[in-house]
Each structure stands twice: as C-alpha cells, then as structure tokens.
Length: 134
Image (cartoon, rainbow, N blue to C red):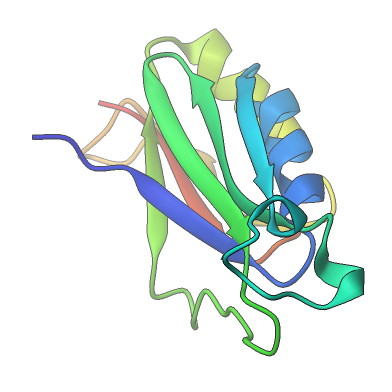
C-alpha cells in the first residue's frame, strides 16, 4: 500500500511545484495543462494552468494541480499535515531553512520525547508540514 498527497491550488500550482522542487531537491515530472485537454472546456486564461503534475524526491511523490475554474481550494484550519520523515539531520535542516520562506514556523525545531528532532512549518501556500527524525 502507498499513500500519495495531492495538493490543489488556486491558480498558483506551478509556483508551488517549483518552490517545493527547490525545497526538497526534487524532480518535476510531466506537467499537464488545462489547454491540452480537449475534452474539458476551460476559460482562455486557464489554458496554461496545471491540471496534473508530479514532484518526486527521495522515493516520495506529491501531485499538484490548480483547482477547476470557479472552484476554490482551502487546506483548512491546520486540519491537514504532510509529515516528512527525514533520514538525516542535514536533510531536515536543509528543508527547515527553505520551507518557511514566505510562510511561518509553527513549531520551532525541537527534541520532543517522541522524536529526535521535530518542527512544523506553515508554508506560503497554506500547507502545514511536519519535519521529523524519529
């Protein structure tokens, strides 16, 4: 079994995709755009928006897209957290310095009883991330 997060954005999926690629040193896979899908009618200003994309890093994959025209995405009131289980302190520290740019650190890097290192970051897109080394 495998779980993959799929994040929907309000017209800025490409910005998010590129930001996360830099944060996680990831590889952007194919990007599909609304204008490429003849089966789907979309407004002219939506032709270049992303209907599906994937970011791969360290054996993980996150998919991203822009919401359908007229639909608004909302990650909720901190009701969803993506947890990154880091392999090394260097890996965690690298992500910890890049991810909060334009966002905010919700839980400073610490050593709680349940983990060697832990932090929470609400990024500039409203996505809550937990970074952990068990």
